[in-house]
Length: 359
Ligand code: PMP
Image (cartoon, rainbow, N blue to C red):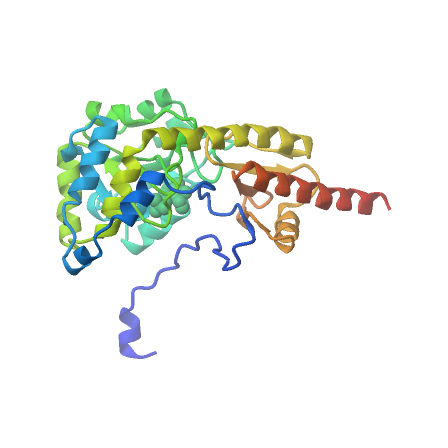
């Protein structure tokens, strides 16, 4: 081993879902929105003054922060924006999780949390979900150096009622509690109200799911002015220009289009509810989803097999080969047409298995 090799920071990276080049596939593997971004964002993109790219972007991300502030009726000193919520959360780990005590998050959750903890050299412990994948608030009643959990949780899609979220916060006034609301717009109630009530709470949201803009990379956090200042201090010590000029303009236009946002979210919820009936009919079981995906296990056909067979038919879903969840598929909610193709393919695969068993 060369001497310098000893000093390389070694991390096992997060593995994102596949992004196949073939655009013909039915892509239900990364919880993207199947509908296009707001037409207002298109207009903003069309009118974007390309010459502006000569200049550095606004380091304060002013237009976007102001638009988010307007939408959520929140002062802009309570808002931090970043390059997707991944960037925002990573920045939170760096800024707030520096205690000797472990940071806590659920054992079945967004797998990036442990990657950030390793990267930023933060001690962590994973707390167990109950046998139905619910977060148990009492499991967070112990000394810690911070807490983070998604609501709804991923990949289970289970939503936790706000009383329980508040219970976790109330029992943890000495640490920062981060609620990752990547999927909150699909039927849950946001914990934003706790940002005013508790100065140790951060709520993180994203443009990637309900706003159909995973490619633009915008995420944001709400928190007390002191927390937002601390985040900005770290950001400005790291990279002042995280938000590019184009994203700022297109993102703020999309944020202003409430009508389109509501329309898309309603369509996805309707398709999801129909998908629950179809999946039940096909013999699947799943926790009740309040997200734009369903975490489903089939009663007789193994998930790994279904995953491979679907892929052969050009249908991509997500499969995690991990303890307790290795018999589940995480299926993003697509358009009605995409879901029809999925159900057709599943029926074919499952029937094939059942007739194989009978033969
Ligand atoms: N949190 C959760 C729970 C997620 O599932 C995702 C999507 N992979 C993110 C955060 C990050 O999303 P983005 O960086 O696209 O905002």
